[in-house]
Image (cartoon, rainbow, N blue to C red):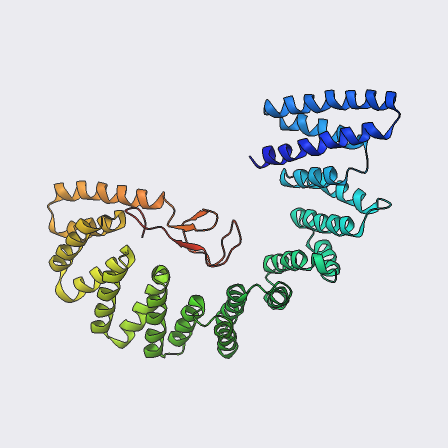
Length: 390
């Protein structure tokens, strides 16, 4: 559909190109040229309508060759080549545009931007970075160049440069980059935490909170650092605060939070918090954690009764699998065999479905990502709610 849309955009450009080229010659010559272009144009249109984009592209290339000054046609073709994965052809189109005599500064800057995108698509990040760094000095190109540079630094995981250029982008456009910059600081904090550089990690978290006061990821990392240093009470406060602020992150923080409760043997607080959370934001992760606590304190029968009542209100495949697991020990062998099959089916249903989805592009994933692998937006991947999800 993208290719079709781009080709449709090329049609009026090609038609105008033919009309303009025809006017530049003598009347007789112009008439012949327009006639030829009209025939070529309609042949390309016929290919397009018959869903033959490759042949249509070749036709429009011939139309573009008639008049080398059809800059817009060249840009459209270069962009189409890049989208189709024909990066070498896109690079040649944009390099030829840049080398053209008499090209306006605006068109040259646009061609440089397009060439930088070609290099990015080809994996030539050093060449792309050089082009975009030069274009940052051109005022009307600065926002696009900065966005491309930020994308490069994210791909290279150069978070310090990403922070620097995101801050510059905010100055140039006036648009807030706080959420993105906070994520970059969190990336640095995670690197430091994994390497055991606790103070450095906390410094990065402080910077994250300075740009985004309620940064959920920073709060989660802070809780993990508290657990690492044996500060379980502080970890519980941090993680409970994060859960109340953003319930969608609960599946990611339950493990460290339950670890902190366990080390303090504060089961009363754990049970109260899980029950409160389940009332306000029902989700199967919280339900299963609370079921395990009830089994621990009140026994399997109480856990089965609790889980059964909850599933009647909110059906869940994962919850059903947990209920079957709890029931196995209390059933004769014949029933156990049937229940084992049912549990296997539940596991297969869960395993075959994505647990998370990006709210921006719809990308589905089995595990949580802070940055969507598809559209590269931060903080848009959330748990899928429903019987087969959270």
